[in-house]
Length: 356
Ligand SMILES: [Zn+2]
Ligand SMILES: [Zn+2]
Image 1 (cartoon, rainbow, N blue to C red):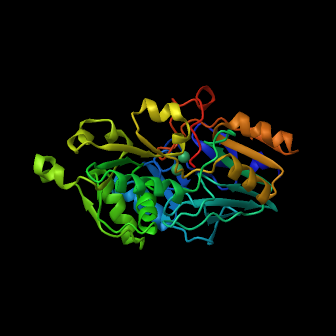
Image 2: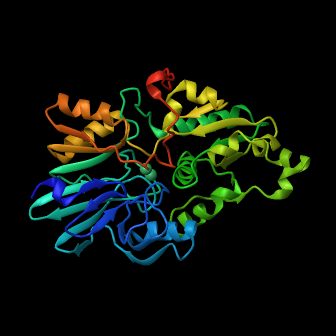
Image 3: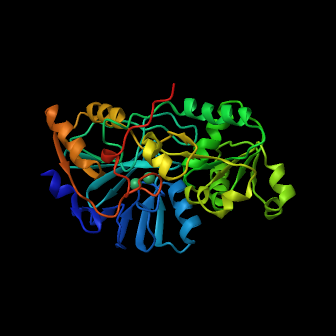
């Protein structure tokens, strides 16, 4: 069997003909396997959905209980057979519940990694490399400029700034699913014990993480009362986490002399930080950077690498240079809500200085 007979790119997403099922479809389909809860991968309106219990809970939270006709939780490591094809969910280390999907049929094994990272994340199970014939990867940060510094070092920059400017509120933009909670956990690991304040848009997902057993310490929602002058002063010197859009809008101007920070892999590009008015860029990514993409591709020992989205041509070119077959799939509809910003063209931008 040829790999393209087991999995093939279609306008709705990756399709497995012998099982009649799609993986992370971008259009409503009869049966879908979902790698993780970010909105470019997990969409509402499918007939049947198979995913980890955490991903199903995230989808129900975001889209309502009727997000799919039926749902079936799949535990990490569990194999589900559909039409003589075996599907196994393996942790991807990206966000809570994120999984790679191992597709196996007649001795051929393809791994659909979804979005993934290799750096340790206290809020989700670590990525497990699975040797395979074909490895399907994204390439959001598939350029040599994207070498992510250690997340704990970036977190230390935030905490140092809070100590240096105790009269200023530190407003940190972070994607509401995954990044925000990872940042809270990193802040706690750094020994910071004061309450961490959050924007209302981050509240429900954060509650879900806690309900799933992720310890985040004292988390408090910014209350409407804190919008008046007295309340604002009370948040001087505190850390407030909000969705990225909120760091630029009126919401953030309620706080006393705010320091605006943004936690994203894109903060590696200095021009992006400047353009967004970010004073304190924190290079914290939930996607593998250039070195980890390469290390992972070597580790899984696949001869063929299919690249779904991101810097597909650059990564395919590197694959060719080390004797592997790299094939951009040009899948449309991905670009992670959790990280990708389609308008960002890192090739045109200058790299930021690396953290000391
Ligand atoms: Zn994602
Ligand atoms: Zn994505």
